[in-house]
Image (cartoon, rainbow, N blue to C red; front, side, top):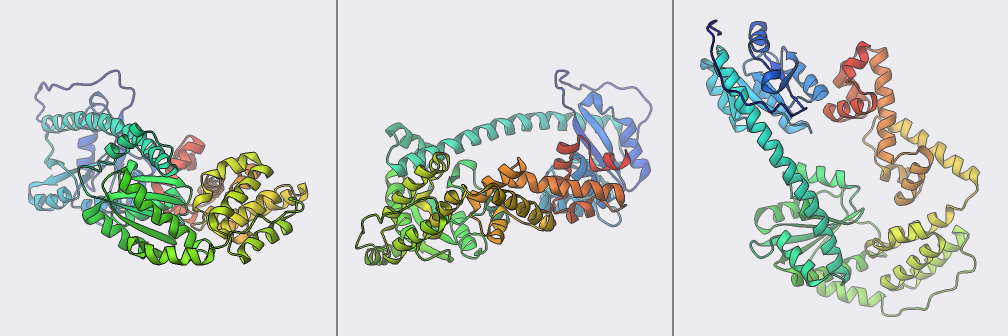
Length: 498
């Protein structure tokens, strides 16, 4: 406790820094909260005190809403303890603040559990002003350094991720320069450690894929995940543990991915190119067989080659298409290929040329994707692109269908793929229609509808912010608060108090 005697403490504050770190105090004892609020000169130390919480549950709401960079929490609290609070945030929330624990000497054993959760700093009770201010100053210095390192690392990872995807695409297309191949090996560190490569087809979105990896306790580096098409990705992981766990997890996630190819160990760009031949065989084998969950590995190459040769032996010349303006004719055209088992590579070339003829923008966008598409995807996209020339009344109708579907299902965890299946449209084409009809991408429009509903609930009900977030379709309250602030310039609580 503060003795009243004056003292000096060396605190280095960067006066040029505009941003103050937000801090939240969590303690069930009012006296302890007030001591920390009053005795510490927060702004002089580079912090903004956003408030205090009486227990863990109230703290969860405030963390989600205000997203403080630092949370100082007591351990022993009724209802939800400090350990339970930290555990919940670590396991269930996107936003991850830095935690500091308050611990009396008698409860220090409990603090060990917090340390196992990644909490490195603690403050002992009773609070001594000199010690607390020095501790906060040290934490500020650490957060500044970590923030700078994180910013540099994230910038580098984004740059390396773009480069690795670009170099891999060039390698697989046969257009990469020699120095690009060397850089690809350097980025993926292929010479220093064993790496295992996978190709995954049928991904709903990048966000879904990354969440799935996180649920498997796999967090690859940005440059290890290379999206070659919206639903097709190459992943290169350490061979030892991560590769085996990823394969096992992907094989059991049939609702998320429908083709998984284990390409085995790769130690250089030549091995990548050779291993990738299996992907082409797999995609061709699955081309006319639909979206069924399958898993392949290098041992399957022999029978895949034999199976492909059986139905690709004869390549017919391109049938004539009378008028390219009707979906019925396009469907008949594609079905003619299907009935004769035309070689997939030949069919992709033909359909791509037709797409380019019908609409340059769409054709160019799909040019790099058709190699990894199945028959039904190619046919569906082609017919939808042709169908884009429909009358304006049809366009008005699809706009109504899009808005009605989103407003009926926004409470649920829906995706563009779900809506495409319900409305019988191709996902790529429907995404363009959503943008045309709403002026927003699908996820933006979905969030807009959810936030409109949340605003109404905040005005008309007394339900908690967390209840409203979940009922509005946001599975994470911190993400809800972030989007709410972006839209309204204030937190949900501030909105309700207007």
